[in-house]
Amino acid sequence: MTINTGAPVVVGVDGSAAALDAVRVAAREAGLRSRPLRVVHAFAWPLVAAPLGPAPFTPPTAGLRGQAEEYVAEAVAEAGKIAPEVPVSGVVVDGAPTSVLLDEARAAALVVLGQRGLGGFAGLLVGSVTVQVSARAGCPVLVVRGEARADGPVVVGVDGSDLSAEAVGFAFEEAARRSAPLVAVHAWLYPAPLAPGDLVPLVYDLAELDAEEHRVLAESLAGWAQRYPEVPVRRRLVRGSPAQALVEESRTAQLVVVGAHGRGALGGLLLGSVSHTVLHHAHSPLAVVRHRPAPTR
Image 1 (cartoon, rainbow, N blue to C red):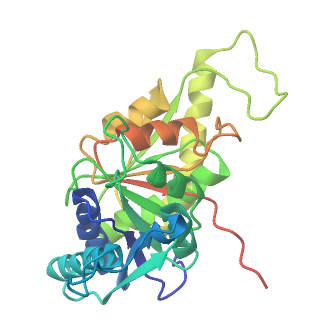
Image 2: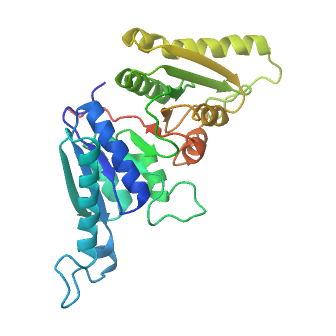
Image 3: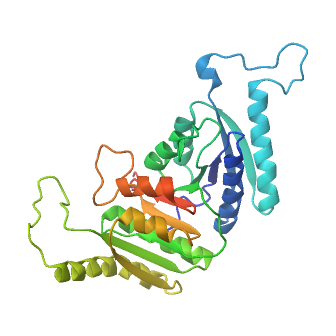
């Protein structure tokens, strides 16, 4: 499941402590993938026509652009300390953070973001840029939150949808890369419509439903388990909230993987309700996987 051979791992920085945490994780991820690391700062000040250069009689590196370049230089130096074997480049790109990062994601293997940067509001669990990029990026997005562990399993949410299958494949690849076990979590509450207009029974047999959910979980893992026989797999079937089950599993995980939309997602939401909840409450780094567009001929 290689995505664009030679594509970099991209990390967004803004001078915040959360961004430097993301740089450290991104450097390790680039090393694991044998990919270069690209450090990106979105320089939005030109959009508001603010003075960018240094004031008179100040050093040439003063001013807003000089500060942006210092953010990038600091991040590049930090990445070199964590993974000296990884080629690292840094760039300041004019534009709004969400737009810049979505453009970068087009040619990236992975985008790594902190949960909230300098522009975040203290009352928000995850910054708006991180939410929007996670929902719309053309490659997987790794959000650095909670504790970045070197041990523990990779946890993936499974619901039987096509996007869930992509998340499962990504999770198996990550577990193999990290020599970690995989915990596949499939949670259900009661029959739910799969599409608008679907009818659900008023009365149903819980034993039959349980057997059906076991089948969904087993079929979702079958092909991937054969492709990655070295990955130990633990199946966890839960009758309860999918989001709550994944948040609980994240307490001991080194990574949680979810699809951007699941079987119950509403088309008007940037993220499905489960992935949105886990993004805001996970205790470990979280990877959000979207449908990758089909290659153009």
